[in-house]
Image (cartoon, rainbow, N blue to C red; front, side):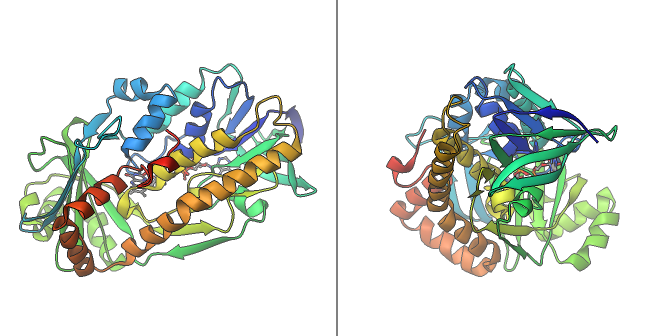
Length: 396
Ligand SMILES: Cc1cc2nc3c(=O)[nH]c(=O)nc-3n(C[C@H](O)[C@H](O)[C@H](O)COP(=O)(O)OP(=O)(O)OC[C@H]3O[C@@H](n4cnc5c(N)ncnc54)[C@H](O)[C@@H]3O)c2cc1C
């Protein structure tokens, strides 16, 4: 039974980082926004927690950087690739770059979500429905005319929005309902992550990526002196890790990388890794954001960062609040957005996929080559920032 009808300018489905960041970034611009999120739980804390320098500049532009710092975000100054015997293969420090924020910012994933969402609430034209599930979609001449949103008391809110944003993750119902073809690739090796006090001195808060002969182990700083250690594994190894004691994990981690001996961890979780690529980012008055449009292997820590850059482009393309009801203007805006996204992301997604499937020996050889050539090192470091190597492509 439909009890209520809402007619916002923009309906956002999903309040992961992509949905919450769009609501935050667009606040105060005069749009009426409804955000629906089906879960009452915060997002999984072990997911994306490192924001590239370009993303930090976006947070500043969106007036939320101070809120991140107040919530405890810390700065990371680079990445070091090492052998398991701690010989440096490549060091990629950021602070010499001439960019406004030559550092990564990191904060636990769930806190990133809550800071963005809280800021979105500053706008009196913002409505959050939670828990609320977008469960029915109806179309009219290729336009998503309305979305039925189910509430826990079995009432249904009908939302008729000019623009519908699918920020509902890698199994996006919005994508499916809009008929946007999506290709999925399941990587054979899931990811395991654990948390514990940092086992090594790390005064610059760097990511330490240990490359063995056939395996990679990554030690990633988290706020408050904690380190997340993660690696991919064969699915047959999951029962061992799932049932392991602190002592068993300590030994198993030390066996992988001897200098990480002494790491006392709790298990953070197992993550099946799936790539989703869609043939288009928009259809009619629907636009896809974040993992709904481009879920990728977390090997290079880019998913959330790519989502934030998409939000910047989308806001840049959108018609003004006065004109968003005009289907012709909206269509033209979304076509522009689609073209910009494809230009920015197609190669990035291919590279990310290639890196995820690459064998460790090839990666070592490549990083060694980069380390031996100053020009290649400079380019590599710049690519880790989220800024385009061609500065005119950046909007910030
Ligand atoms: C272990 C790990 C580490 C990572 N590290 C990094 C990193 O360091 N840097 C980085 O940039 N990225 C990283 N990523 C990737 C990053 O976490 C994701 O790309 C990003 O969080 C995706 O956000 P999203 O909002 O698009 O999707 P999601 O987080 O999946 O959010 C989708 C939301 O939609 C809601 N929803 C779904 N369907 C409905 C519906 N019908 N109605 C209402 N709500 C609905 C869901 O409940 C969910 O809250 C990592 C990922 C993993 C797994």
